[in-house]
Length: 456
Image 1 (cartoon, helix red, strand yellow):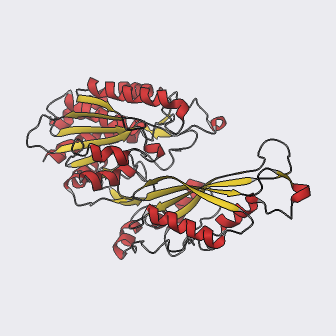
Image 2 (cartoon, helix red, strand yellow):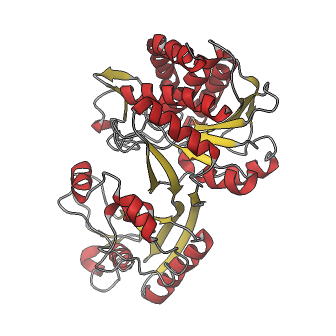
Image 3 (cartoon, rainbow, N blue to C red):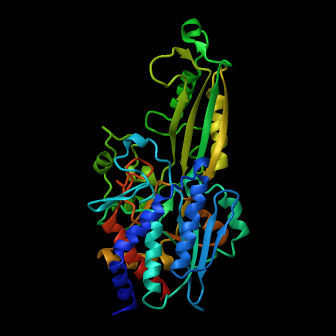
C-alpha cells in the first residue's frame, strides 16, 4: 500500500471524529464584522492553534495584527523538499436574518449529505479538510514536504490588517506554493481550480438634506428628499445594458481574450443554470458577455444596502434628513481601487444636484489576483483532483475577492492554488449555510494526494 493510500485509509476511518471536531470549531461564534464577538474570534484562533499543536505542527504562534490575530505554525523537517503554505480563515459572516435559519446557526446539524451551520462551507470546513489531510499523513508515515500555516481572522472584513502585517513577516510566510481551499467547485461531480479572483473597492455614499427629519406634508415638493436624490444618483451608475457609467471605469480593464472565452465556454455554467441557482425571473447585464464572463472577468458595481427614513412598523410620514448606500465594485486586471474611488467621486461631482450634500467613505479594498496555471503547485493539485474524481478539473476565474492571494503574490512571491469543497448552493453568507459532506471527504483525499505529488 502506498503512503498516500495509507493516509487516505486513515482519513476514511476517522471521518466521524473529523465531523465532531469541525462541529466544535463551528460552535465558536467568530463573527469578525461585529466587535461584540471579538472574544469569540480570539477563542477561535486559540482553538485553531491548539488543533495545530495536536496534529504535530510546531512553532505555533497567535500573532497580533492590529485587529484579529493570525495563527502561524510550521513543520520544517525535510531539507531539500519544497515548502507548502496552507492558508485559511477562521472568521465567519454574521447570521442575519436569524428568523430565516431552519437550524441554530452555530450548532452543526447533519441532514442527509449536508452539514448545516455558519462557517461550515465558508470556511471552517475547508480549513479542517486541509488539517485532516495533514493529520492523516502525519499519523501514517513520513510527511513528504515542509509545511507552514497562515490562518487569519479578518478575511470576512477584507483582510484589513494584512496589508501592514504581511510585509513585516514576509520571510516567515515565504513558501514554494500556497494551498488555499477558500474557493469552491462548480458541482460535486466537477472538481474546480480557480486561477483568477476579482478585487474589491467598498464604499459608503452618504447624502444629506435638512439637518433633521421634516414633515413630508409641510415640506415635500419644496425640499429635495435625500432618499430620492440617492436613488437617482445610484440609478445613474449603470446604463440600460448594465454597463457601469463612472467616468474612466473601464480604461484599465484588460480585454477578455479569445482563449479566455473558449476556456470559459467549457464550463457547465449556462444562463439556465444561473436562473435556476438564483431564482430570478431573468438575467441582467452586459449582453456581449456570457454570465460566467460577467461574474469572473468583468468589473461590476453593486448596491449592497440602502438606509433612509422610517423603516419601522406602521407609518411615519417623514422627509428624511439623510440617506446612505453601501456600494461595492468588483475589480479585474488592471484596475486600481484608488482610481475607482476617484471615478466614483467624479461621477458624483458631475451628477449630484445642488439641493443636497454628499460624502463618500472608503471602507476597504482588496486587490485582484491571477495565478499562473502552469506552476508546479497547480499541476500537482490538478493531478490530485483527477486521481480522486476520475476527471480533470475545470479552470475558472471567480467573481469573489480574497485579498491575501494577491498580497502573497506581490509581497512574498508565492503563487496560490485555489480550490475547495464549497458549492454554488451552499448558501454562504446567507441563512442555512451548508457543506456537502461527500465533496468535503473527496477534498481531504485530494489534498493528501497533492502533498505527495508536490514533493515530486
